[in-house]
Amino acid sequence: MIVTENPTTNASITTINPICRNRQGPYAYEILERLDITGQLLFAILTFMTAIAVIVFIEEACYMYKKIPGAKKSMIIWVNAGAPIIATTSLVGMWIPRSTMFTDFTASVFLAVVIHKFQLMLVSECGGRKEFLNKFGLQKLQLNTGPLCCCCVCFPRKDINRITLFILKFGTFQFALLRPFLMFLQVVLWSNGTYIIGESRGESATIYISVVLAVTTLTALWAVGIMFNLVRPHLTDKNIIPKFAAYQFIVILSQLQTSIITILGNVAVITCVPPLSGPSRASYMNQQLMIMEMFLVTVICRMLYRRQYNGNPTNDEAAKDNLQNSTLCLNGKIIDDGPEKV
Image 1 (cartoon, rainbow, N blue to C red):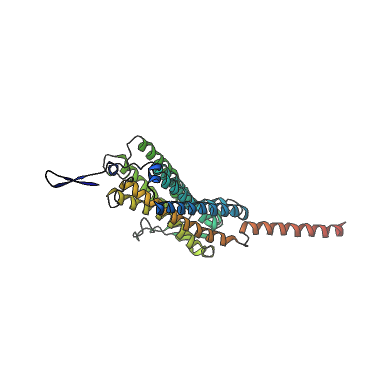
Image 2: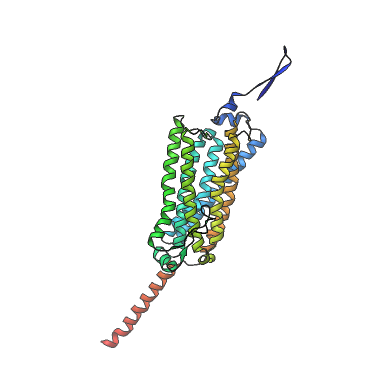
């Protein structure tokens, strides 16, 4: 905003910088040219933190790939990849502000898959689908949990069987399926000028896509919450509560925090500072926060998931060892008994 004084009338005239009217982010060189020493140092620190987060994840993924047998390792690797991937997309959006729509698309698609994989990991930690049904077949599902229906205490409890387990899995699968499609539709409409971030007019496509995204997200989180409340007492020895807290931390920061900061930018609480308009500056600030937060989550996840498998054979490995030992004993018995029968 520029204030000038009219010499003929002694009145001040307020003119708005054209940059502040533009919702699109600036080019990368416009940001880099205006960075002072503090800004350059901040960019360097955040880039270094992202690189460390990616290195920590790669090392942890290699460890899990070697130590954890079966399909469980892929689920755990997917869940652990959530924080470093979001940090990486935030770093790209910070360096190249005009890529925010594409980086948000990548992070949202990956988050949808992570939520589905976390629910599958809960079932896998209970021994798989058959063992899960055998263990919880006589219990009832508690449906009045967050983020939906937490106050609906009148909801009936449902039996646990293959159908209810399928419905719970479908609750997160629909999110992993619909969210990428809706985000792709956002990018297509944005490139055509039809989708505008933060627009709330009733005739625009923005509000309808946002409502559908909110419904699918809450449904998926509700399904995970139901599953977690069911298995929590049986998985305390596997640090499932802090693991769920870390997962919730990723979801809340990447969804709720981003939405709040975006709204503050759209209503001009976060003001325009050229070359960044209000919405662009809000996204810029959110990306910097996300890098620091996801770095901490990556470190926490490494401690939680690696501690469980250090020096402790998994159930699959123990079962394989028992099978090999039984085979050796049986073969030894046959060899010992053989000469006596001849």
